Image (cartoon, rainbow, N blue to C red; front, side, top):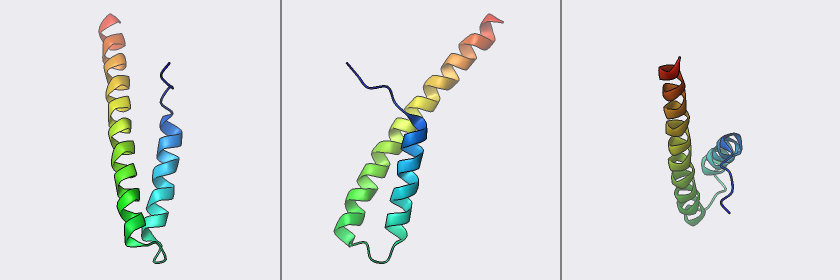
Length: 63
């Protein structure tokens, strides 16, 4: 069973990643992993938002 995507949690994680990347104490190797994770989160957020837009468009056509 697939877990439901939580947009708010994804945005929260992206904010935490941004803070870590901006921290001068963060190592370059860690930044590489953080950027990879942020790319995955951004992709998931875009897909989620596209799905929401499609649902709204469909509802709008039904009205």
